[in-house]
Image (cartoon, rainbow, N blue to C red; front, side, top):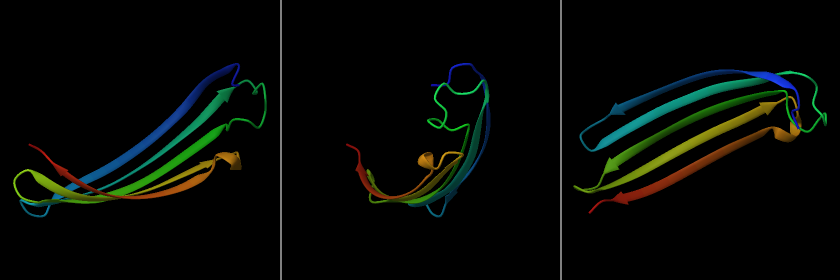
Length: 103
């Protein structure tokens, strides 16, 4: 679909932080941004692939130790995609709750 594309320019930034509240509770916060631009010849089929893609992501979570070998974790994630073709734009929100144990 991208015949003759000479190169892609890819810019990325990511930040994250972890914080230990106590010996049993820890939390994290993170975010990222990336952008891709495809340079070169025209597409074989114009309008089927974007020339520019921008992604934004934010996430956070907390983990609590439940005894010696178990933990309960809660996480949230938000992601957005923005392109020069509306078909490829999206927003996504996810929430997860995880119980883990080891033997």
